[in-house]
Image 1 (cartoon, rainbow, N blue to C red):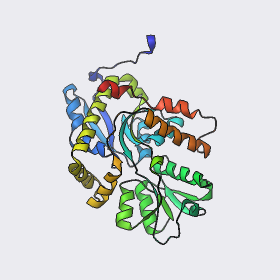
Image 2 (cartoon, rainbow, N blue to C red; image 1 turned 120 degrees about the horizontal axis):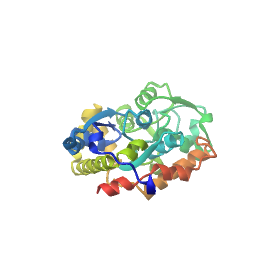
Image 3 (cartoon, rainbow, N blue to C red; image 1 turned 60 degrees about the horizontal axis):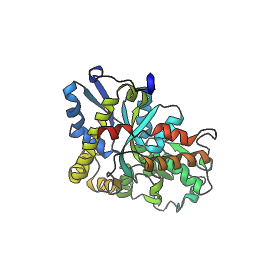
Image 4 (cartoon, rainbow, N blue to C red; image 1 turned 45 degrees about the vertical axis):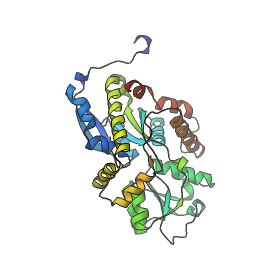
Length: 308
């Protein structure tokens, strides 16, 4: 193609788009329940199929398998997926959360990350909580080899901590908030800046073939994000309904979830890069990977700018 132009496709060529919703992405719930995306695409006869993601790892697996066109994850999770060959682009910010921390049970004797040596710790590989755990260990001179890593999906990790099957858990909201409020779990390590941004990803081939549709999806996402900011009580009610968790748990989740972003750019790239370099130093990302180049390939700000 001359001049590196992106191939275009008319809206008539796409009959359905597959988009995820997730309880860790409140904007996705607003978009789904208010039918903002359906209203945007209906005039072109494009339907929307909603697929639940239980974690960044699942959203990214669905994208890689072609069963999703748009999926929400943590920025660092998207980076590790791309490094491992998953051709995704991060194109939008749906939140700046503190959605993960390290938790234990009361009276476990664990007071700090250093106390994790020799302990059983639950986490979901390929997600921000797992990456958060790796960075926390590295800060204390430890690696995954110093603990017994128990790989469980987020909900199962919470239950394992509750039952005493593990000593600690790298949690994800809203289950993290539920463990605090309902189970009495204790946070023993938190570091907000180690939580990477909530980003919306698109399959690279879908974006290349359908740039106009991507822009329209992001324009709808912006409407959903603004609605969420303007209607906090209704947003909380949507989360309570979707999660079946009590109002105080959802209130805790939303207290530490900043929805006042949207465009993706330099600030997100810096956060994702810092996570990627930390993972490389910890040996999780291979030494020969050009992490800055991978971040540049991942983060693509062109679509939202054009959509506005």
